[in-house]
Image (tube, rainbow, N blue to C red):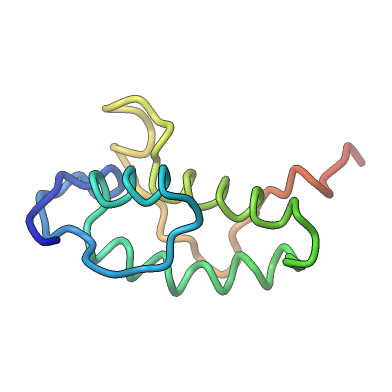
Length: 107
């Protein structure tokens, strides 16, 4: 599968994802339809930081839910067009304050 997409993250028309590991068929279809290969490659690097920063343990069934939520946020999949993600996409710097709804509580 090849072609171009208008990326939900960078808002460019660019090459579509051809390969990757996707967590569900629904998410795979959504990513292939709306994420460019450059942003996908950025996510693959950022994914490691997310897993390490949030100390995700994949023996816990909720870890995949948290990671998927972070992915959706990274790609602005749930943002309306023209929203904050369109104005300034995050590059996920190392000092980013990642949210983990499974462990974050009011302090």
